[in-house]
Length: 118
Length: 104
Image 1: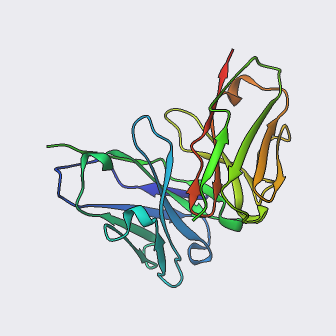
Image 2: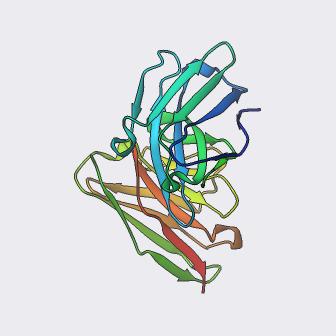
């Protein structure tokens, strides 16, 4: 079964960093990229960035550049996303998603809740 | 960077009615990278349409996508109870703000 499994909920203080993981099952891992999308409470979907799994190349949203990084471990079929210098504005549900045809995100993880609070 | 706007912000309709949602891009980018998603509270988003007009796997044919240039649409014929949700368009690495389709 094609699926993405995400790591569990996190709570951080302002200024800290958080690392989320996303493990892929049921498909040829390096054939597809993985994107990260988040949704803050009461807000819409926000694209964070994408990693090409067979090269490790990344691109990220301008608004997050310098704070977000993504890595891939092909041996465990896992993509990791690290976000640093957290503020309360980073409180959100973070989704990973498979990048399918023409950038359509065709498989989604269940999401990881990150809460930033002092 | 493309900016997407969606209209209307909210659409109030009854089951069985049709819906037309609009997505406008700030400049031309081609329909190839235009996608539509359905998002319900407590669930992950669901891809409906990719490449402008191709239905994703398992999506019923009452959903259709179209448009070109800077103007794109998602049409839903005969709304079913499970179709009431928020709909987002996406172009490459940008999402629109969403259209909420609610029960009238």
